[in-house]
Image 1 (cartoon, rainbow, N blue to C red):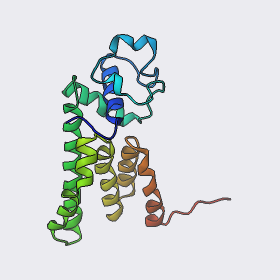
Image 2: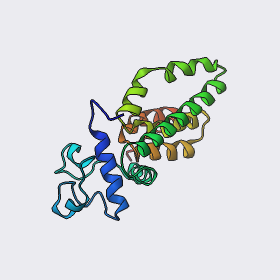
Image 3: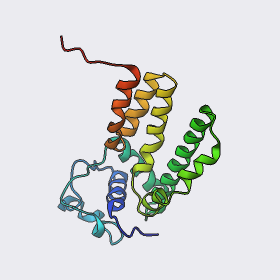
Length: 181
C-alpha cells in the first residue's frame, strides 16, 4: 500500500536508490541537476523538500540501501525491513516481560496497537528501525550493562536521533554526575 498521510518514505527510497548508484546521499539534494538521470515517476515526484540534502543519519542510510537491494522498484523492501524491525522489538519486549515475571499477554498491548501498524507499515516511518536498539539499550540498563546499553543507544540514535531522549535514564541509572573542576 502506498502511504496516504506522509511522504517521508519517498526520501528513504530515494536515498537507497542513489546509494545503489554509488552516490553519497549527503552530497546532493534530489533536485540537483547531476541527479536528473535517476529521477522516476514512482519516487522522485513525491519527495518532500527535494531542494534539501538528506537528513537521515548514517545507520538509517545503510538500511535504505538494503531496502533498495531487496526491492529496487518500490516500497516492498523497506516495508519488509520495517516489519522485521517490529518483530525484533516485540521479541525484545517479550524478554523484558519474562525478566520481570510478567505475562507475555501484555505484549498484545503493543502488538495490537494501531499506531505502530499504521505509522510504520503503512506510512513507512523509521521509528521501527530504532526501536529494537532503544529497547535493547533499556534492557541492558536494567541488567547493569553500561557498555552494551551505550552501544545499543548509539545504534538507535544513528537511525533516529529521537533516541537521545532516553539519555537521562542512563545518567539516573548509573548515577553519573559531571565534574566541573
